Image (cartoon, rainbow, N blue to C red; front, side):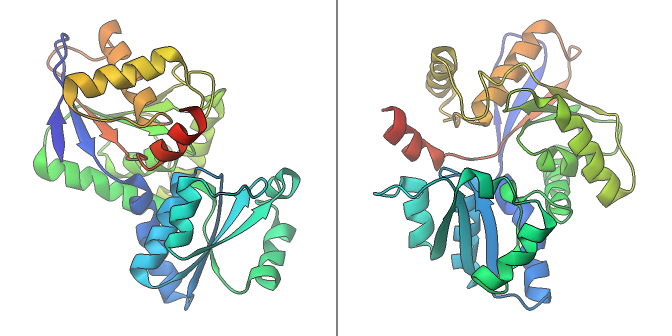
Length: 284
C-alpha cells in the first residue's frame, strides 16, 4: 500500500494508495441495509468520482442506484456516466437551479414521490457515517507504519480530512490541500463534521488553499507537466482534480521546510483515475 517518493529534502515522503469514496460509503451501505433500503440515491456532476463509486457499490452489493446529475443530458454519455449506466445506475438530470436546491428540506422531501423510497447520499458522499470509514484508514496505515508525523490528503468537501482527524491521536498532524478555489470555508466544514461525529473539534491540522490551480477541476500547463513528470519519475499516475494538487502542494511545502528534518509524511493517493477518460475526451 506504500510507495516511497524520493525527494532532495530531509523528510521521508510516502505515498499510500486508498479509495476514499469506498471508505465514505462503507458505513452508509451498512445503514442502508439496516434501514431496509434497496435503492441508493445521490447527486453529482457528469464526471463525478462519487457517482462512479456509488454505481459500482450498487452493482457489487445488489442495490439499485439513482444518480441525479447536474446539467443537461448529453449524448453520447461521457465515460464516467456510461460506466455508471453499465453498473446499473439510473440517471436523471437536474437543471442548475434545481440542483442548487439539493440541500433544501422541502426539495429532499419531494424525492421519494419522484423516484421512490431510497437511502439518500449527499454529493461527494460526505455525511456523519462517512467519517468512521475514513478514520479506519489511520488504523490501517499504523499497522504498516506505526510511527509517522503527518498525513496529507486532498480536500473537496472535507469529509476525508475530518475522518482522518477522528482517527489520529492528536499528536500527529494532518494536512489538507484544497482542490477548489476560495477554500477558506473548509475549516468550518471540517469542524462541524468532527463536532457532530466525535463531539469535539481539532487543532492538529491545516488546510492549504493556494494549490487549486484556478478552481475545482481546473488545471494549467504547469499542473499537467507536473503530472507527467511525477509519472515519469515515480511510475505513479495522479488524477488532475485531487491527487496532483495534493502532491504538488506537499512537495512545495517540503521545499519551504514545513516539516522538520527526519519527519515522515504520508500523502494519501485517493484514486479518482476513472476521471482521466472523461478528461481526455474533453481536452484531448
